[in-house]
Amino acid sequence: MAGSYFPQWRVRSGTSDGQGQVIAADERLPMPQTVAMGVQHVVAMFGSTVLAPLLMGFDPNLAILMSGVGTLLFFLLVGGRVPSYLGSSFAFIGLVIAVTGYAGQGPNANLGVALGGIVACGVVYTLIGLLVGIVGTRWIETLMPPVVTGSVVAVIGLNLAPIAVNGVTGNNFDAWMALGTVLCVGLVAVFTRGMMQRLLILIGLLLAYVIYAILTNGAGLGKPIDFSSVANAAWFGIPGFAAPVFKAEAMALLAPVAIILVAENLGHIKAVSAMTGQNLDKYMGRAFIGDGLATILSGSVGGTGVTTYAENIGVMAVTKIYSTLVFVVAAVIAIVLGFSPKFGAVILTIPGAVLGGVSIVVFGLITVSGARIWVENKVDFSNNTNLIVAAVTLVLGAGDFTLKLGGFALGGIGTATFGAILLYALLRKRGA
Image 1 (cartoon, helix red, strand yellow):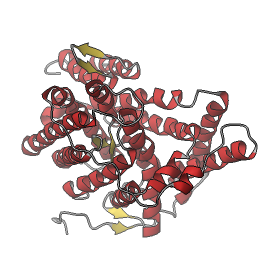
Image 2 (cartoon, one colour):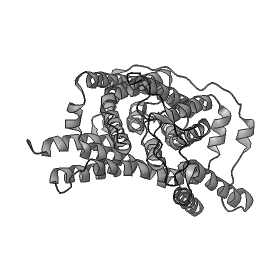
Image 3 (cartoon, one colour):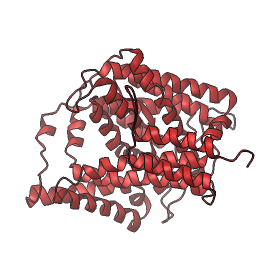
């Protein structure tokens, strides 16, 4: 039992406590509740996992499919011990656009070049994981202590915030509807109990969707939802697979993104460790390898680079359900949906205002997850090193500060990540 590769997953009901029982990684809910939670995690990851490929000219259905495949691969590599979902990484967007010259509309004509760079990044990421598996995480923790990892995780949420806000402020109706969506999620989070409270993202989105349909299709106040595309879409279809093209310049530009993915993954695992009270450091190397191999596999067939998702960690923080079997269910759902153009058409009917409102909540949860790393690790902000590192990192990321060196451009998340690492290395007091 104790030496088995996978946990035994003891069954817990998880519904008797109005405040929500903690369901540990090696526990599980009854199957109906596990499926419901899996659906919620699909909803949580969906906006970002679809938005990232759209911004880069990738096939969103393939991104969904490979997120599910990557999550299952990650689950196998960590022996079902680390609760995480792998979705499209936003850290690639700026560099992919740079190396492909993508204009922002339709399929990316130079997709193969980007895929070659993504595969190269996955290889570097996997090698880092192998090194961590051999020598441990001490060297990473020296470079990226809690003040750095917390800052990097928080920056991801802050950097994504303008995407959510700008997408819902084009007209007055959408802006108010986005705030209404936030309110729907908030009301479900605060005033419901049991499984309804645990499904706050899903129920809040559905409630806002219904309200939007009533106000637009019914009362004619805004842009109505067009369901014709759903009727015309096929139930089953193969997504657009593509092969990588390996060009040295693109590979050199995209491979360093592995450092950002390491920082993300490290921060996410530290956050889950803090929330569950379990030290997951011994699985860090395997987690890096799982994420790296998933990125290689995704890039090899035309998908985006993937990363462990803070959106889903945010859901875990609210629901207190950390069962890794939930992510198996979510992954299987994503794989099935990836082969369904009908599903893609349904999702595309979700109004931008509603999806933007949910994104505001989820991106906010990412940001707070970073702050939670500081709190749980008792980061001392009376220490000027910590203060400067966190302050500068947050502003660099939130402001999307970009550095250009010849043809190389490092966007806000990358600048903030490397900036946090370098600042801490330069400013920390030796021997303190």
